[in-house]
Amino acid sequence: MWLATLRGASLVIASGLICAGQVATAGASGEDLQAYRQHLALTLQKSPSPRDWALAAQLLDTQSGDGGALRERGLILQKAARAAPQDRLVQTLWANTPLPDQRCRATQRCVDRRAALARLEPDNGAAWVSTIRKDDPRGTEAALRRIAGAERYNEHLGQAVAAWRDVFRRYPPPLPAVHPTDGADASAASGDQLDLIFDEAATTAVPQTALLFDACRTTSNPKADSKRFATCGRIARLMMGRSQTLIGRLSGVSLLRVSHAGTKADIDMVRAVTWQYEQYLKIEPATDSNAVAKQNYVNLIQTTDSEIQAIQYQLRIFGIPLTPPNGWKQTVEGKKVEPLDELPGKH
Image 1 (spheres, helix red, strand yellow):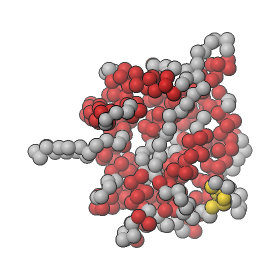
Image 2: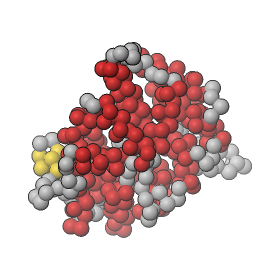
Image 3: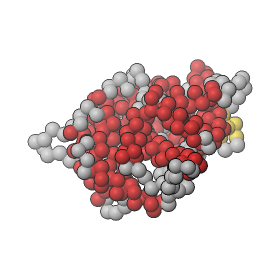
Image 4: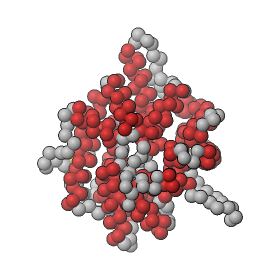
């Protein structure tokens, strides 16, 4: 299902470059899916729903050219954000989607789109990640403090899963033909669609953390005050303990390591996060090969709005404890890693 993405997560989260790659299904070529996504983007733009417009803007990301798609995404998202100011998913895409900086006239008040989600959920650390700006030290310090002081860190992946499920129900993707008497084909088609749903939902929900890592990496900020890295440590603990996605919690581990803010008190949490990750990698193929288990897994993410709850439920089914045995250490590329050690060459 998402095993390749999860395996790759340990190699990219340290740099904050979280991105969901397009899933290749057995029943549809890459060209078919590309054409489908582009057609779906145009179809959703004609919908009366601002949420559909926002999702259409995400699909435009695959178009190449001279930057026209980037400008088009910005216009579509701006339209959707104005039409649905209280729709959290719309505001998430408006805040988090990479777009050119806004240009406002001197007489016009320019509302920063990157704070759109934070205005809706000021107590959610994940909502403030997009407010970090490059080459803005004061703004960055303020954003870091807001994240560190947040009560929760929820990417709302389940809400995004529900939204993309609805889209693919209305406009089925080009997956294998399903015959009523052919259970194997039906299972394959259902599993392929779940892969597409999860892939798009992760792209929608999980904020890009590259600027967060840039602000918290000690080697990139040799003149920064020690308070900066203490704040980053609090953010890392928030993500490790409160993020509702696996990548979010793993990012918290990496953030703690690159900020060198970890203490002995953090070791148990770091070990628990990395243990659950490694154990899930082992059982994920069994879930992926079982159509009912796969469906139940996605259903649980949607109903609980938490990938973590779904993963921990799977671990319990297989009789795997949520905390590691004494002496266990994370393994990265065949080597044991100390809980607070920064991983060389991964950032």
